[in-house]
Image 1 (cartoon, one colour):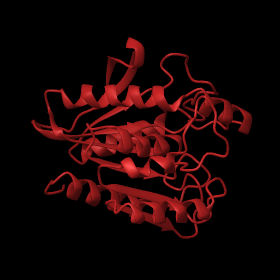
Image 2 (tube, one colour; image 1 turned 180 degrees about the horizontal axis):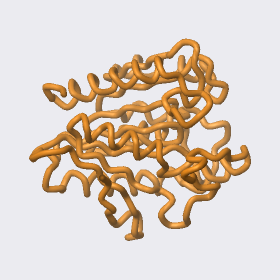
Image 3 (tube, one colour; image 1 turned 90 degrees about the vertical axis):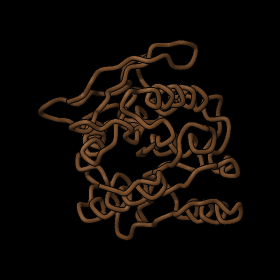
Length: 254
């Protein structure tokens, strides 16, 4: 069951989050920040955080829309994943400036590392879609997280703006922790050429990174609430994720 928490984000703004703990006495547990998709802290995000808790992690899912509220239609019991039109998606992405999101996520990681049940040296970040993008950027900027898993996050923006002033790929030189990245080979929103460029750049800088191209799937393949979900690919990616995190954080695994 989730605990509602509040912490101070950029500028001292109050950010909401949901915390999921493993069962039993789990002092010195690893921690993980779960970064939501563009659709906000929804049932999918909660399900991921719950699964991480069942795997032995203290999982914190921050709500990056805490200041302004969800910019699109919220999920309901009848329709947990309502469709957002493309203009709503673009507006939502623009409403989350990279610098502010980075500061909010750093604050979330610091809050989690200080939790009574968490080993502060073993905190990872896991993100999907827009959250995958933010997870990658966090690995390039934060000194709190020890590993990054990103699912189909954009690494080359179509256009730069005040909200998105730097290409994520240009930050790759600063990546300081192990990275595991998943991309669907049929993803129409992330050209495979961008994935190739990411892999080349990470290799050029000798980063500890693995980029996995998942054949036959597109964007959102890990989310069962979205039409692109692929059960087999999602299951395999989840197993790889747990193994990667256990290895990167120096755990024995669950």
